[in-house]
Length: 426
Image (cartoon, rainbow, N blue to C red; front, side, top):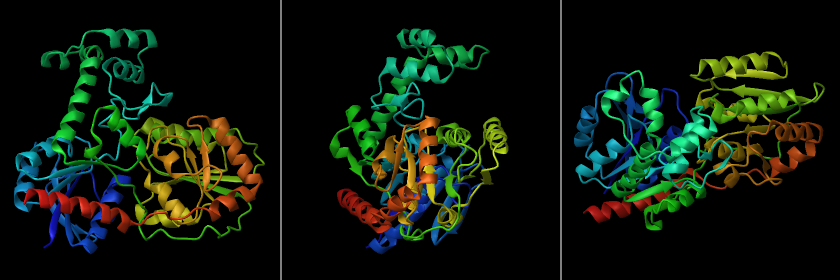
C-alpha cells in the first residue's frame, strides 16, 4: 500500500530556493523507491495554483489568505503524514496546529535556527555559538543588542518585568519602544512556541548534531528527536583527483548575499592579501537588501580579482563547483547544513568553511578542507594566501573530499519514520 506524505514549505521551485527546498525536492524523488508518494504544499505571494515539478505535484496557496486555502488543501489531499520543513508565516506552527486538529501524524525538520533563536542566528550577542537554551533574560539582551540597542540599555531591558504591550500600543508611534520593552515576553513566547512544536510533532528531525543538543537544552526528550543528516543529489559527482590548469587559485562563494552568509568576510580577506597573490574570487548570489548588495558591489569593483556572477539557479551549481579549486562557506550563523558543502564534497571540491554549526560537523580541518574562525577576515586571508601559494594543500584536501551519504540514505531513514507513524495511526 502506498503511503502519502505532504511536505509543507514556505517557498518552492521554480521560484528562488535554498537548501530547504533542494532537500525537499531530492527527498520526494528518493521516496518513490520506498513506495511513498509525496506532494508539496507551498505558500506563495501569488494566486492559488497547482503544477508538477520533476514529477511531484505542487500545490501553492496564498500566504496572505489566512488558513482557509491551506485547510482546503489538507482536507482534499488527506495525507498519511504531514511534514513541515519551514518556520515562516506561510508555513509554520499554524499549519502544524491544523494537521493536529485533523488527527494527521506530523513531523517537522528544523532546517533553520528560527524555532530556537529570536535573533535567528544562534550566535550569542553576535560573538560566540549559543547552546540554544531559551532564557528570557539572556535572549532579551541578545535580541536587543542585535537591534542596535547599546549594551547598558540592553541589560536593563533584559531585567524588566515580563510584559506584553496592548494591541493599540503596537500600532502607535511608540511601537518600536513597546517592542523593545516586551523583549522578555517575546523570549517567553519563543519557548512556548518551541514546546508547542514538540507537542504537535511525533518527531522533530534535525540535520546536525548541534540542533539535537540545542533541543535537549530546552528539555525536548531524546525520543522526540531524529538525526537525519542531509546528502547531495546524484547530480553532484566528481573526483578529488582532478586538477585545474589555471595559474590562479579560484575560490568560489554561492548563496544569499546577506550579512549572515558572510560574503563580506571574503571580500575583506581579499583586500588583506597582496595584489600579486595568484588568487581569484567568484561570488554568485543576490540579495533583497539593496544597501548590503550595493556595498558588496562597490567593494568588489575596487579589486579586479573579484568577480560577481549574479544569481545562480540550482541546476547550474554543479557546473559552478566544477570551475572552482575551493568553495568558501564563511557563514556568520549556525547553519543546520548547508547542503552546498555536501555538494562540493561529492564533486571533490575542498571547502574552506567557518568553524561554526553544521559546517564544523561536515568539514574535517586539514583533511578535506579548512575550518576558520567566523567573521575574522585576517584568518581567512592567511588561509587563502597559503592555499594560493602552496597548491599541495588544495590537492591533498581535494583527494579526501568525497560523498559520505546518498539521497537514498536520507529517504530510507525518513521512510522508516513515516511507516512507523502510519502504523501508529491505523
